[in-house]
Image 1 (cartoon, rainbow, N blue to C red):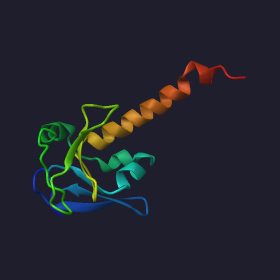
Image 2 (image 1 turned 180 degrees about the vertical axis):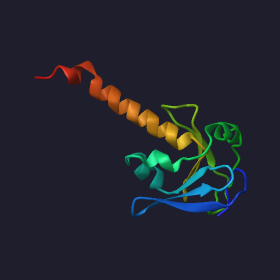
Image 3 (image 1 turned 90 degrees about the horizontal axis):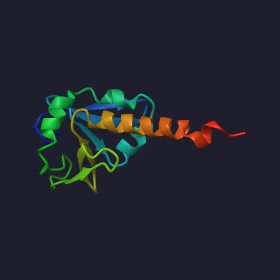
Image 4 (image 1 turned 90 degrees about the vertical axis):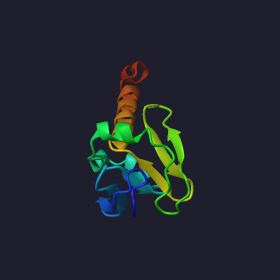
Length: 127
């Protein structure tokens, strides 16, 4: 598979027994087949799949007209509602592509939201 951002080769990487992603050997961007990003976002320690340099990811995030590595159609550039600095590409048929550092940022936001909800005063003073 070819990286939609830098045209480097994508190598398969695994998390756990049956969850997969593809990481570019050059820019370290991550491709998740349909549904895998959502499943991995909720898995403990899955942010360690995102080993790329976030600075390189920020530069690559400016490239938005990217072909899906599965079908070649131009993917839609989307922004996360909680983290607007995270812009990722999605093919409704095949999956999602995150630039280096973006998947980790989403995981950090998810963890921060959980801690905030847990520490909310309504949760601290229950009988």
